[in-house]
Length: 441
Image 1 (cartoon, one colour):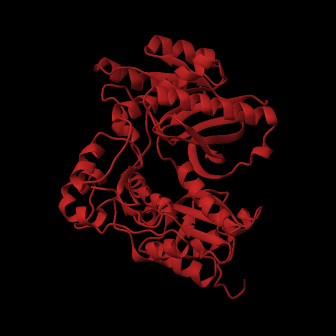
Image 2 (cartoon, rainbow, N blue to C red; image 1 turned 60 degrees about the vertical axis):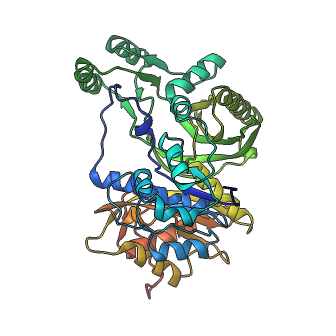
Image 3 (cartoon, rainbow, N blue to C red; image 1 turned 90 degrees about the vertical axis):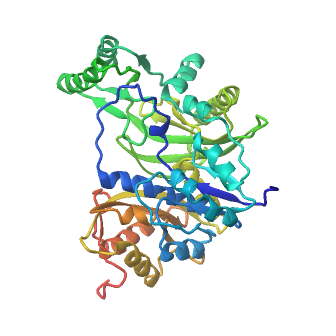
């Protein structure tokens, strides 16, 4: 079928577990059932990538208020309706079972998933969609921190880690790392794959956890890295085309709490020293060449940092896929057309029991004139079901603001969120701001 202009966006966002070899020993992880459901619902952020003619498939049914708010903000979200209730099944597997019903709704589109997985070949065939992608095997290889660390070592850049494959080597490298050693799973993501070792007791606990798995036949593959004292968390973004040409798509300043992502804002090249910017840019272009030589093309997110002593670490890891940075950049491009700036905010929250927080939030933001509708600064929630999966959730906001005014707009929005039964767990976002409908405000 001749593809029409338009894309079918689909997750899931949490692909790293599907790439991770089953025989690898795993670091201790902290999680919960509702945390897993929140992660499933994060595919809704792909709505920010929507252009005219695009369609979107998500793990959970999108509430009408979400679609209306995104459209009013200038994002033409057009979800494919669910033909049966969403459960815990993988969104790709469920879409395959519904292929006959979905096919006419997406005819002629190009499949653009969050990341390459083997199932997408089958899905493109079942839906009769155009699909051009690197192989899933290639994506799995280049998204491993082991692969990106080999590139860092080969080019002599700052920030390399020690690869370890035995418990004896692990202990030796942890001692060598100094006061704080970071243990990194090669396929870990967003705080779930890094453990900071700050004491002998902590190390012994993790070592016992790994040893039990090794005794059962699991293979050890970790990276050990000293902790950098960070001045700035940054990421450079690129697109590699199928012919190997490369385009820079942006540079972001990331808000990272420990190892957990909390959002992104623009990082202007002029905010860096010239040598910093040139090093980050040159390393990004080199990495893109290495990725293409390995068989990869598509979006690229390279995470790095600048340490407090001025050390530039151009690559801590590579995300060879769509990323939250891709979403942030889409918000920023949209804002720039209207003379505004944009930031992406992820805020962990507690939810009032029995509340319907998402519709209440949207209605209160609208009543306060703070729901972004392109005429003035404001915010728009770019995920809905991250607020409907249990007693805790995640508030994901696109914040559209004049230069330098992000904090004020966000503070007003947080006050309205609190009045809607959504309470930030992060002390940086206290519920002190009065809601917009407070008569004493």
